[in-house]
Amino acid sequence: MAAANGRADVDSLRQCYYMIAKKEYRPDPLKLSGAPLLNYNPNLSAYDGLMGGEAHG
Image (cartoon, rainbow, N blue to C red; front, side, top):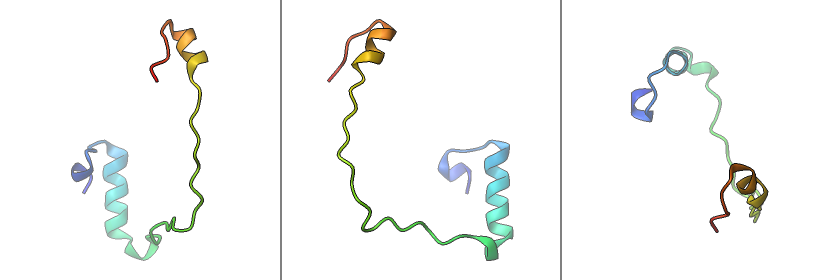
């Protein structure tokens, strides 16, 4: 399960084991239907200036 998601670290393996062993404690999937969509486009030009580059828009 962890490898299928590109993870092989100890914490990911432990979480997969817990999910398999403790099925009664598995939460229901999060439902996001009806959630408002945010049309946010951040201006990162200040950070580009700090990094010595220009904004790539």
